[in-house]
Image (cartoon, rainbow, N blue to C red; front, side, top):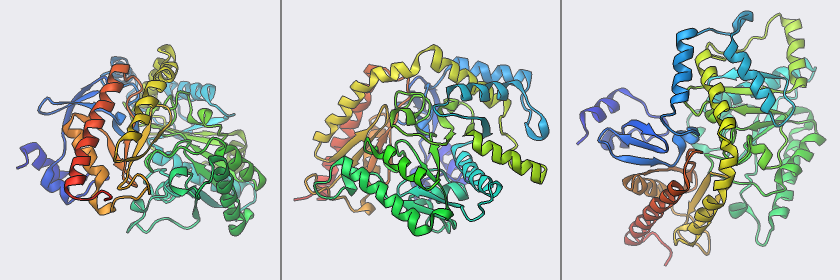
Length: 460
């Protein structure tokens, strides 16, 4: 029986990334409050929030400085847009701070409300730039299989997951996908990570040549692939990819929506992964998710092309009502101040060895084929046979079963493509809470194993 609140939910809400049939029977988990890395449901049960919400609540819950930043800005100027030459201090200061922090040369910042909008904007700006440069045929964008770049029409096309395309008539024309950099699944027998990276760079080059270099405009990549299963490319992957992109004048878009602002122990994920993008998309931890805000960090050559288009057309015809929203910008500014003042990125680096050790130890579990990750993010891939890497029948939903067992243990994690369980706790998680997270996850894995044995889903 559903509670009254659950019944009202299923009769009024459409839940993203949810089986809309099943939830009518099970009802949702309804959360009421949060503090630090813990959230509590309406019955008062605490859960360790092992996914930082959706990879985003970096400073945890109940941060009063962020609450006061929002309240103060609401009292002063609750809304103002930046259309038609208008502006306000929070947007100006935030753009200035982001330029200062940028890991690559950045000229300007364009504000959005989400990572999806940021990547959608990236696609439009690449097209816009090439029109300004007199290259109207250089418009194709290459992403990767298992990439995740959002759910708007353009960004969902860049996303390389079938679940985001099926029956949505996606991807749109002009989007291509190259090989996913997952050594565990896609390496040839005996192929080293170095040779695998070389082969993937060759795959990308072959795709560019097959499409025609004069038609390929950009390549987009997450430093570490998030919703595709937390895929960490080999060490030399990005330098090899960058060499190919430079050879054919292909613009490099870095999607830092998940990895930006400390997740890998550096301000930006590209710094940890030897990756040199031309432009960068950010969102999520920019405001520790306390307000919806994202941005595109634009290089000078792209901005110069945008100026040329304004000279020709009279106006830059793109933007959102809430671009640079003053409350969201004020909260983001305070978030960046806290990161710096509290040495959050340095503290993350100090926690990584413990997190890595606990993650790696999970590979000893009978269900775990690979426990991969970088920084404070991990993907635990469940397999039916560790020796052969044989996967479970996707219809069994084994990772989802493990997530349900974890929830019963008071831990929130997530299942994604390929029976992977993902972990992405708030950056402020303590060493004791790291151990608590992995202890609870281990118990959930044990319960999943017991279920799989009972149901005879494991290899004989």
